[in-house]
Image (tube, rainbow, N blue to C red; front, side, top):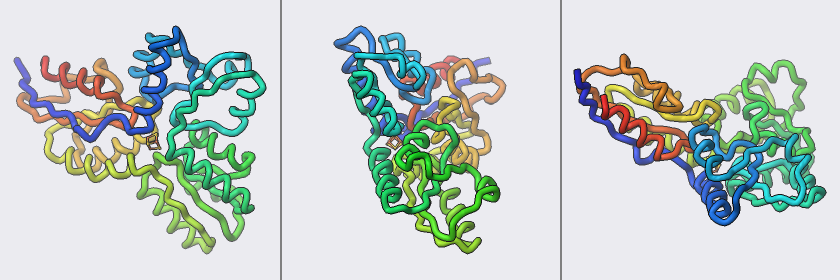
Length: 282
Ligand code: SF4
C-alpha cells in the first residue's frame, strides 16, 4: 500500500540566529584550516555535529581544553564562564568567540547584579553549558534550580533576583515567580527567555493544529527542543519526537495523512528535509 502522505515543513522552525552565527563562523574557518577545536557540541543536534566533524570540527570538553596549547578554539552560542577565558590566556589559546549576543547580554546582567551584591537565583538546567556560564559570572554563588521543589531544601534570603536560562518555558518562569511571591519573598524577576524561542510558541501552536500527525525533529539534549515539543503535543496530541529518520515508525501513519514537520532552534533545515523525503517515499 502507498501511504501518499501530504508533508509540510514549518518554515518558522530551524536554526535561530545564534546558532547560524556559530555554525557560519566554524565553517568559514574550516574552509581555510584543516581542523578547528570546539568546546562542547557546537549545537545540541547530533546529526549536525556529525556533518561538521566530518569537515574537521573537533569537539573537546573542558578537561581536554586544559591540555591544549597554541590552538584555535571555538566557543559555541551557549557562552562560557570567565574561568575558560582565563585558561585560554594561560594556554595561549586563540578563542573564536561565537557566544550568542543574547547570552552575552544575560551574562552581563547577572554579573552586574552580582557586583551589586544581590542574591541571584537562576531558573535553569543543572549542568547545562549556558547555565554554567551564567553561574560563573557570580563566582558560583548564584543558586540554580530547575524545579520549584528544589528550593524547599534551600534557605533563601527574604529578597532576591531571579533570572532564567534563555531557553526555558515562559509559562513555567512566570508560574515560579508567582509562587515565590506567594511564599512571601521579595522577588526582582527578570524574564530573560530568548524571544527566538518564546516567539515560536504561538507560531507552532497555529502550525500543528492543521495536521493529522506532527513530527518534531530535535536532538535529545536540546532544552528548547523539549519546551517546543511540549507546545506541539499540547495543541496536537499526535505529535512524535524524533532525532533522525531511523526513528520514524510507519505505524504512526494512516493513508493520506497530512503530516507537519517542525523542530527546535538547533534543528538544521536539511534534516527536516530528509524527514520529509523519507515520509514521501512511503
Ligand atoms: S535560542 Fe536565543 S539565546 Fe539561544 S542561541 Fe538562539 S538566539 Fe541565542
